[in-house]
Image 1 (spheres, helix red, strand yellow):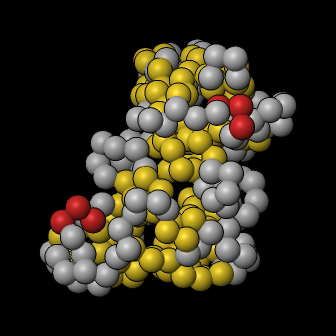
Image 2: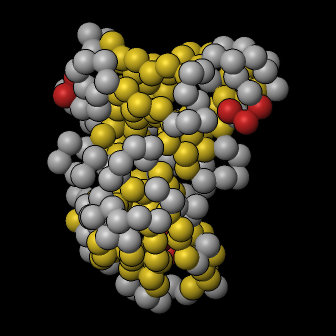
Length: 106
Length: 119
């Protein structure tokens, strides 16, 4: 199952609201997770089952979607949110990731 | 504290072998499936392999099938990845990641990674 994220690159300012889209090549129900990765660090789980916030993750992060189209929204961007974001499908093996969305400060 | 610590990375010639280890602590290791994920320099994340908590069920990405072997020793709380017939395209940071049992199978804990260079 291929996952396509859009955009691949996003420039935004502190306080902005941004949305990243992840489209699956076939239906995956709600078997989707979102990760944040900062340079030189391991990925960090943000959202699982498409819309459930991982413990400890700020509520400005939210996820929606099912089937083939999913979104990650960050409201009121904070300086620590500038990173690369990946979606991941867990509906079937091989597990696959989207190509990533790099979020940079404008 | 739940923690995963990888080791065993290094520089190896094409065609060579390497064994990675991932030491787990802070949780009941045997109760969770485990994964290896890699990231080539400047590239995205690629899932490599999975193993169940108890038993021998495993799965592999096509890119490593037949060359890599995942295993675990629950008595030592350690996950392994035996990598044989290494190629230049296997150069990457290798992460081990714990499968979240009630989190849709998502990877809720990651190690810091170990670097493998095939050259």
